[in-house]
Image (cartoon, rainbow, N blue to C red; front, side):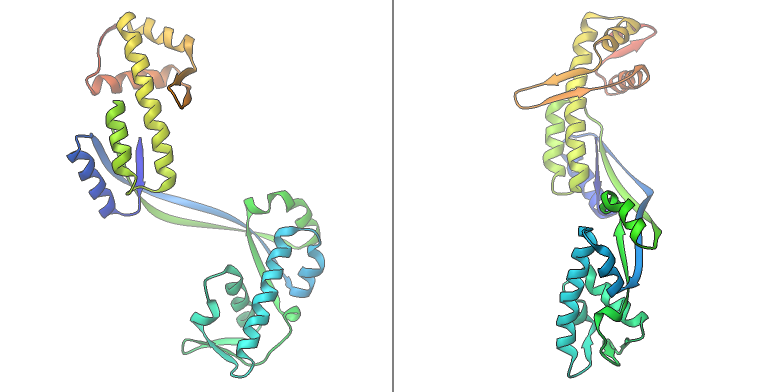
Length: 270
């Protein structure tokens, strides 16, 4: 089971803490790619509003834009300028949409850390670009493409990721590792590691118990495959473990490396 952490220092710290507690682990880094797909709609606000109809996600965004624009115009009506920090406020995505639209429509410009308006125009006259993550508009996609001219945008981010992998199958050590790693790892990787660790420990117990009775490797693999998926239960959880012959072979080699069993030819000793 592996834990993803936010940076190299955290990776090293978590690895040290696990090692101090007697939990075998290894750390590694990798370069990964985050890919995000967006549906882009561009038109005057008035046209977007007219065509949006019952498409909730567009209607809600346009409504938020209206409220924000009216509030911002009220603030700048006398001075015709506002600091960038105040303009962007708490970081709502609609504020950035408005700022981009004002600059692209040559209604405003950035000057000395301020947004300066040269005139005030109705929101309806602004050409607005809306971007939605593709998975968020999936249910309306066909209707959106009928009503609007759309384009697709894909963003690829190259990112460095940091991991600490726990090399244990003992349930007590896995539980200890989970307790230590909780404050270091990302939430998503922690949840995955939790279920992975529990499944590994319980599956190892099943394999080792079976190996005590079936001491030939080929017969052991055959017997385990006949029982696949193996259902692992305790008082408050039920886990189904699916595997094939190749993954089972690899797991047996891992158990041998960890010292839980010995394999020589077709013989197995626990």
